[in-house]
Length: 265
Image 1 (cartoon, one colour):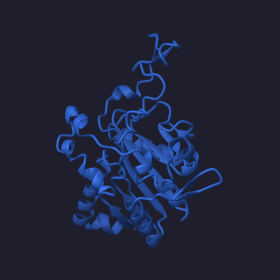
Image 2 (cartoon, helix red, strand yellow):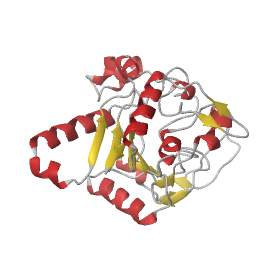
Image 3 (spheres, rainbow, N blue to C red):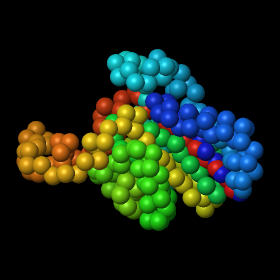
Image 4 (cartoon, one colour):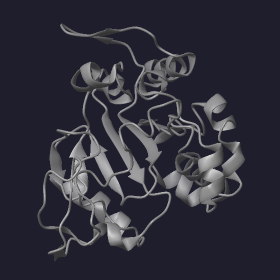
């Protein structure tokens, strides 16, 4: 069974590239693991090498937030590999595919994957998942893996407004047609995976993990939103609205790249 696993659709998201590199080493060194998989994997360590190069100033110092702030690069959504797949619909048309996106399209056309795994990471949030199918049992298994590794789960609203929740820290992957009007993007890797009937999984892991992001203990501390118009009970972390990885404005100006993965059985 062919499976695709691309990493690096976001240049500022190196966890996927590191994961693919570690998996490659394991597969090379462990014959039992390699032979027992039953899948043919197509691993792409980095799908946006140009964007990755522009982040190298902080890659060597991943725990240094000053270095991260000073050398961070992420292109706008409509210039990202993950969201520049072709899209044709009644209300939106997108054909400005990037060369890197076209390379992933050719790979998927060739191997016709049954599973595509896009490897992402955020900044300060818990781990969460996007699935192309509403499968609560699979979602529960995925979040259990993160919890077993000591990673806090993202328990707040979804990163993408309106994403349908499957279970705790797991959501249905929005398609390009749902996001095009708001973000000016094309289709996502999930849209292209749909052509083959493939299951699509997107993992979002925190670059900096803090257990407090999963703390849902109520507090009476007042909170303000939109300049102080609303007050009420909030979680202990004091965040209102979306505590997820991306503030809409701060990461959309000249600074977005992704890590993704795809596989075929």
